Image 1: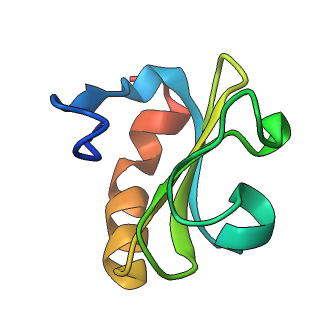
Image 2: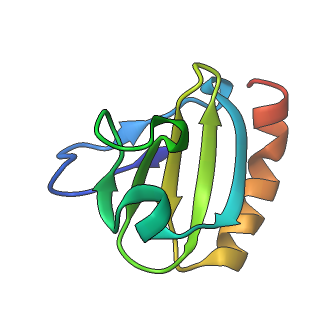
Length: 96
């Protein structure tokens, strides 16, 4: 899985499927969970929530990694996202 949030990321970041423990679409509250929109999280915020990359809205892809870290990527395309995750669910479950 590749993602980039310019200007914080100049190059695409890559997460290997075998590093992802779980991936699902969920509703979130940007203000109460992450302190707003943008590139959020880290040492000064709720570590249990992990990091978030979002611009607007309240739907995101929640990634829970095998190393215990979490990443939420905001999306405006819930149905398309759920379809893509369903396609790749087998890769996540089988650690491909």
